[in-house]
Amino acid sequence: MAVAKINSSHEPLKQPCNCYRVSSLIETILETEQTSNLKDKYVLGEQLGWGQFGVIRVCTDKLTGEALACKSISKDRLVTSDDARSVKLEIEIMTRLSGHDNVVDLKAVYEDENYVHLVMELCAGGELFQQLEKHGRFSEAEARVLFKHLMQVVLYCHENGVVHRDLKPENILLASKSSSSPIKLADFGLATYVKPGQSLRGTVGSPFYIAPEVLAGGYNQAADVWSAGVILYVLLSGMPPFWGKTKSRIFDAVRAADLRFPSNPWDHLTQSAKELVRGMLCTDPSQRLTAQQVLGVFSLDICSLVSFIVSSHQPVL
Image (cartoon, rainbow, N blue to C red; front, side, top):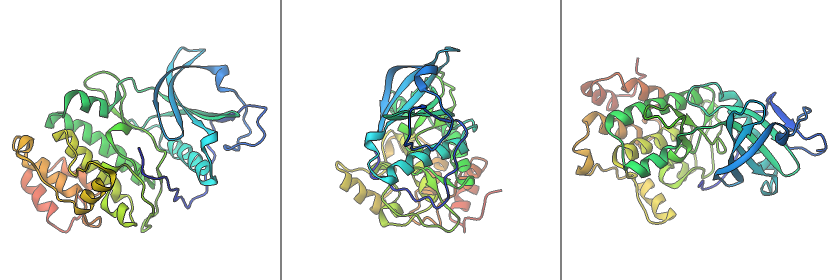
């Protein structure tokens, strides 16, 4: 669960065109003129998960029979104006990013007296976290495929001026139950915009995956790369690189950033995997690999990789 929720957007919110409200609603969060009722088009089914502001359930299109997912955000839990603005920002960011192969597609948004409902594609394979629990860890070959797709969507976010701020296996979904299923990045509830040179503030993220500069009080999109580096470490080893029994001890371990590679399993993994993790878990954000550079690393051999990481971090061609 996220540590805190801070909305740092400096851009005006743009109203997506696929938002609806029930006709009887006078005061709305979405401020849309289009009227429709979720329950006229969809049947809500079993609960799939829950979050800070509501639940996620299966929802079925009455006309086509298509199975989708519906995230229902309770308006009672939106206590402050920032809470409501964060919901609008989540919808806007998902609308902007929808269409990428590795982003959960937002279909439509409905508002009624009690909830804001986000209707999204259903990812039948569940969370990547569940697969980690089941298998312990992934082979290097399996992790490479998953991680390349993750970095492609992280780069897509950054190119669109978006920082996710809560990358973790629980927010990475598998589109299907197939062993070769593509991943889908989900839960943009903590995502926000970041401008070039801008420094964001506020402790935002999940303890094991949070970057040290977030805890220090100033960060940018490089924090996503740190979180992705932690994910890579977990995929390959089954354990987070920085550990603690309490949230405060986890934070202390993240600040210390004493990165180690225990012999089991790291002696059985390639040197290039370790070097990539080191490059992503560099404590200096200005020297950390960017998402674009991480993707470039996939085409390098180990000698080129080591040379690149200890160099001045010029962009990979």
